[in-house]
Image (cartoon, rainbow, N blue to C red; front, side):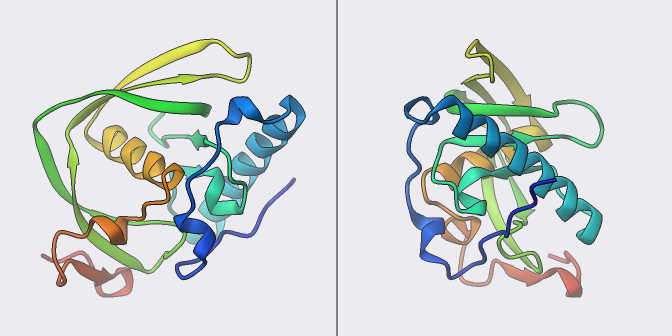
Length: 169
């Protein structure tokens, strides 16, 4: 098991733009995917939540996500070099959370539906059309690849809550 430390809010590496996974050696990409899967599983075990993680969150500056929806609707799957190819004009407001600030919730606006094209570990191009929870999740994780955090997308200065104090509006 290769559980990695998750970078926390305030670590400047979280605001760096990640490099394409295609530019890294295959062995490095494969190890990154294993570390992401193991770190996600460990986080879920310790905190009781978590659906996905981005490589920059564990200090790997590559465009790699690992997604595993608990309801089985998607994953477990690594997404290499994901790109949003469509976003619906319809948006939703929600409380977003993040492994890099596990007790903080941030009110953000996301597209209700997105289509994301990515490569899998074998190098095949795939795509997923995501709505609702999965759409929000993919947008959140893809932001990490561009050095953006949910805190950067807060609707206004009052759009923050502590998880320990509930999700009330």
